[in-house]
Image (spheres, rainbow, N blue to C red):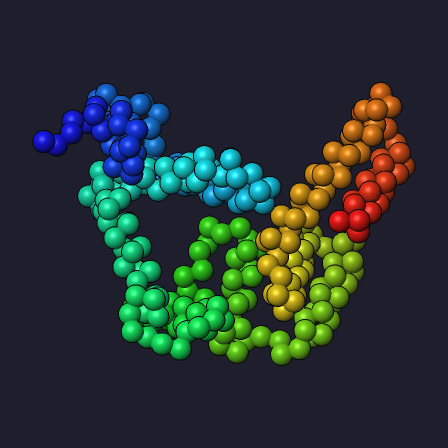
Length: 278
């Protein structure tokens, strides 16, 4: 006999079916949660992006106990979107899971089929891109840059756009040329800053960031990951500055730049010494 809704919701071993049922109950227009009922794809999308970043943050910090919860939050976002889609007659969560399963099987014929010759990560990457190119063609995405999501963080999107362009030969052949372009764009900002309008300066800054992302790509560095690490380093070192000031009974706003710089340099030196010792 099929379980009732209440039995599914309160079954600890219910798995994904339990989560889907919980979402359906939350979205019930009569007995659900008013906040959940009022949401739309557009209002939920920012939460989806935020949850993805929280997953990345937990991994970055190696906070494995937190990762389980963060992955659950991200999964819930998928269930939420799928529920709204089902209500609109578009698709269900099971359709989402089936399409992803079909895609993974199709993109890994060396695992699930009889294709041979893919015995390294590099070979798999090349095959993966060929399959994705065929999929884009099937969706009438004929441009080399079609399908790079607009909603990606700008730095990550720049990196992906440049990778796509490089695949069809639109790329600097020598990393020295990219570095020359970095220097050129930096000089243009220096020259323009006194007379340029805000919009012109915005464009120049964008050009510099774009070419820096390209320079990172040529070095084999993902710029988004590099910037996340730089952010984490800044937070860590500034926390050391605040701790050093607190030990003196001071706060940053009550201190001089010279005092804070000295504590920053000390934190930097301590990190380097620790890294060398390790």
